[in-house]
Image 1 (cartoon, each protein chain N blue to C red):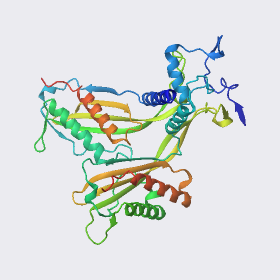
Image 2: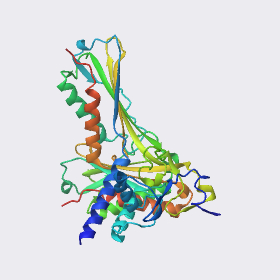
Image 3: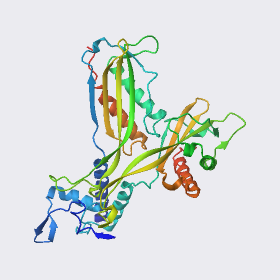
Image 4: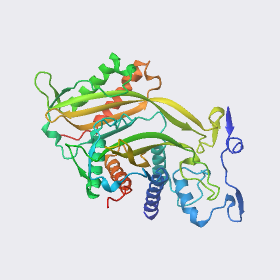
Length: 238
Length: 182
């Protein structure tokens, strides 16, 4: 059921600013000049309660940029986050061959991923494809330049849900802020210089495992996405 | 053209405002064992048995993270007149721990200001990192000093430069609180 947000603000505990008569504009929330600038910024970013544009300076272009920022800022459980660290001063052009290293003995691996041949096969296949696309050759016969280790784990994480003031209404069950518990899996890839035995690059991808564990299609898509986005951050071999 | 650059400026402002909203400032404190005679401590070594588990798979066994902390701590201790030894019995053993936790910012309206900061007045989740540095007296086996810093690390683990700056800042601020040796 759809509830009109404006009529139910008190019921759902969302603050609406006190309105004050303004002879020029009619009924608008009163703001001091000092915070007017901040409100403008919030409006621009699509963050205000009153989302009807009033200021002539608020251009569509600026709003689009702001919207993009807003979209980046609001990360729900459904977004995959990817990151990497790299050893500074390492020239990746010196490496050509790689192989899989021994599975490492990190704590908190998750048996649902670690002992899952489907997960391992697809993850390793995706890594091999991405490494080949970057000009690395898998070598099993001679000592490789690089060793790749992976580690997959599942952690409990939290998120909060709340009424979406931008839409102006909320559905029954979403009108109160709730803490959502979900399981996020993290896939970590470590690339080790086989001669010095030092990690020269670490990349990771983290995402809601949701219904991925019992859906092989979805798992395959997520693994591909994770590995592709992660290895896109590998320094180029110039 | 004028209004375009104006809207770009405003957008830049919005980014800056958001960046400030989501980072709580660093909090630093320390405990000192009252009986400890800090002037007596001159040499230290790292605790080889320290648990380096951070509770975050991105940082567990991450050499870029751990080496930054170690290098920073060694630099700051050297500046304070402590000498690192690798053989023999040191006066104190130094160990550190780091952890990353998710926290909820309720983000309700501030009645004094009459508005709330960004994010639609919606509650949001962010990550905080805590770093502890401990000094253990080798002779008594007692913890004589502990200093720690807590800061929002939202988005800074994925940004190596930002993470390194944050570690530098945290270690410097924590070790500033070590009692002087004189």
